[in-house]
Length: 309
Ligand code: GUN
Image (cartoon, rainbow, N blue to C red; front, side):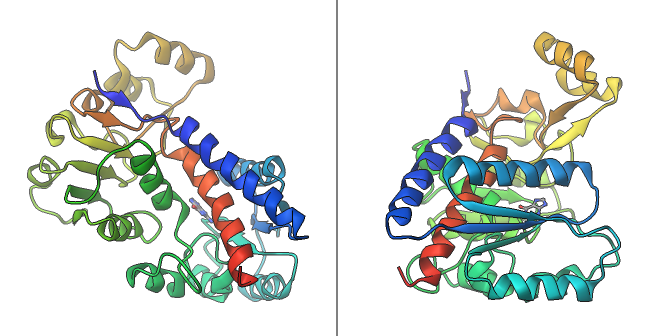
């Protein structure tokens, strides 16, 4: 039987630690604050941002949600970011992506003060991560999802040092920073992507396989080394019955929920591939919950660093 790595439980552990830190800071008159910017009416983004703001309230952080209309211009967004950069009560700025096509996303992310960049998307933070500046003054704020991947591995007692970690996907948000974090934990790291030749021969070498491709069920059983740890970062919504059968044939519990809701979530790893793994993160309930927990941790860290604590 493969071991299930419970992201919900690990996220709860981290959130409890953050809440304890928040009450310590409160005793010093400090309340970490997060500004979450949600542009337009993308349903999925709205669910994520609401969840982030609610978690702030649960843990005792200050938060506010700013909701410019879909028609907002890059210049208006730059003014908003400049205001948030200057505000003393805001420690973290999160601009939910994707933004509407007419907004210059790169320019905007570059305008966020690196000290308040709790998503870790600013080139200064990417550079600090690459340089291995992960603690102390002026250290990197690390992107939340890859930071969560490391927390899952560490808190589950899975060895990283000396292991071959294969990351499939090279996005700036997940793949690249995940590879860099694994490297700093002394893994031997291979990054694969859409142009990689004979991908299965490489993924089969992985002691730790991180799937961050954004394609439902892309990692099939024959791509996994028996006993490997498989971290599934993908969250893909399936609404088509035939596709559902392709992934979950015979899974009665899933079928019941699919019939009721008309959709289900599948990761980048085919559910049958989990059976080959020694340990794996399920979807939902694996990496997903860590993203918000690490955002909270980053906001508290940003609040401390900005005050030289
Ligand atoms: N959109 C999808 N994932 C993320 C994330 O981690 N941060 C932000 N800001 N937007 C996202």
